[in-house]
Length: 229
Ligand SMILES: [Zn+2]
Ligand SMILES: [Zn+2]
Image 1 (tube, rainbow, N blue to C red):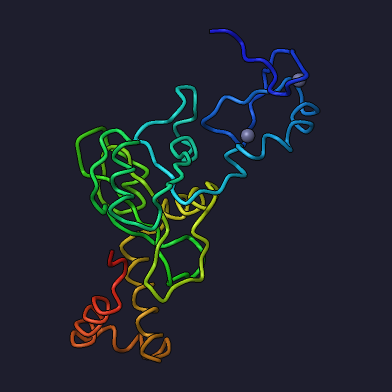
Image 2 (image 1 turned 90 degrees about the vertical axis):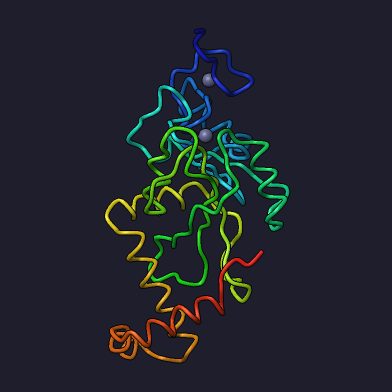
């Protein structure tokens, strides 16, 4: 294995320092000065700056020397040209990923406080392939193989950017180290549905204990249902 050269084209020194924004690509520099000079160009591809409409979570760290304890080591951009057309998205994902099965693995809310108008959707299967521990943590059940993540929401929800950065997903992953996806999901669903019904937080607390209201909630959940395509 030859040592990488500095990514600044005008520099031929060996690059011993890796760009810390790029967990999954081998961009190296000889010095901070070269990194700075190259930033205008590198920011177009640097993972810390790129936003994409889809990211993929791999079951294993993408680079063999990556830190397995760092969630960022498993996530890379997978921009979809077919984004927005569900059937075409699944075909595109199937052609680009290994061990990908076009199932909706689940959806989970952002770490952002109280956000309840859109989800992260996870696509990918329960097999075959190695266990995908990061995706399993986000969804709250066991996933295998590659899992693709896009943002989506109900038809009346347009308050979120469809392109997002890796840092957003990494922050959400960190949030679910200490929060239960099922519990967060239930809380946010309730707050969204109650808001639609014009009921405040106190009504939500009282009535969430009654079975009748629970039934009504799930009915409304169906009615205002999420991603229908
Ligand atoms: Zn250099
Ligand atoms: Zn970089």
